[in-house]
Structure formats: structure tokens, C-alpha cells
Length: 77
Image 1 (cartoon, rainbow, N blue to C red):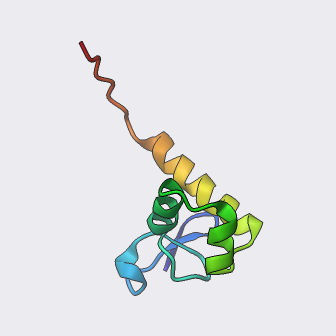
Image 2: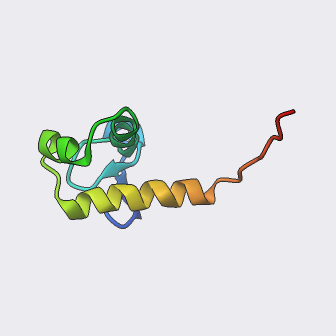
């Protein structure tokens, strides 16, 4: 197991090493997908028994990943 960000781990024995919230077997990408799909933060907290701090950890990790990626802007005619 390796902590790849505060509160986020990668462990080959848990979901094939996908980033997960420490102490849970929940992929960060799954939670972000649910948010993007329209679930509210409150619904996710209830479904997975997450604290406000854990939600902030998920969002901070997702923001850091997006920030690291190079973006290419394409101008549409």
C-alpha cells in the first residue's frame, strides 16, 4: 500500500491499485463519476458513510490530478 496523496492510497490488492479513499474500498473515480452523474454530496455521504473531511479529501485529490494534466485547447471554427 502506498499513500499517493493525503488520505488517498493505491494498493495492488484493492481494486487493482486504483486510487481509493484510505479506510474504504471505494475508487476515487467511482465517487467522482457519481458526483458528475448528478448524485449530491449528501447522497454519497449517506451511501458510503463518509465524513465531510473524506469528501474534501476526494475533491482535493481529483483537483490535484486535473491540475497535473496538460490541457490542449482546440479552437472550433
